[in-house]
Length: 138
Image 1 (tube, rainbow, N blue to C red):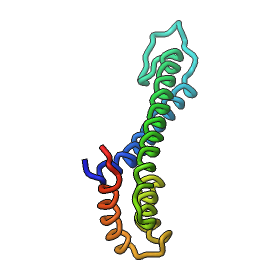
Image 2 (image 1 turned 120 degrees about the horizontal axis):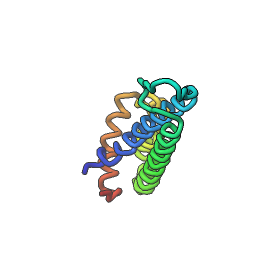
Image 3 (image 1 turned 90 degrees about the vertical axis):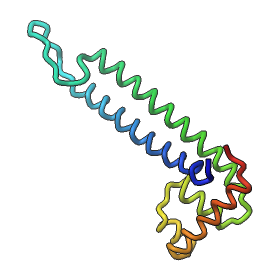
């Protein structure tokens, strides 16, 4: 695994977390929008959740998934922070932290450091090389 692939896992974990949170929100909305069941009529449902007990069970599962994604992302961030802190050049650390742990765009990283966009991209390559040497990740 390359340094970039290792750090990219953090951004991927954030994306996975956002997806899990959207799934949870949809399930929550389903619970809120459930109508009372009329037992004297035939049951016809075009919803993927049939009744309140199904909806609550699904909501609990989605909440567990969100919590698991949070735990995964936090663990990845902590491990990466320890490794990034080993990089001796502070500019390189700032680039890696800004991009991968804080989720900043390249433009935001460049403005924060007072460099041009192109220079930050060039320094990012150097930062990844330094991270690979000092990081010792797996």
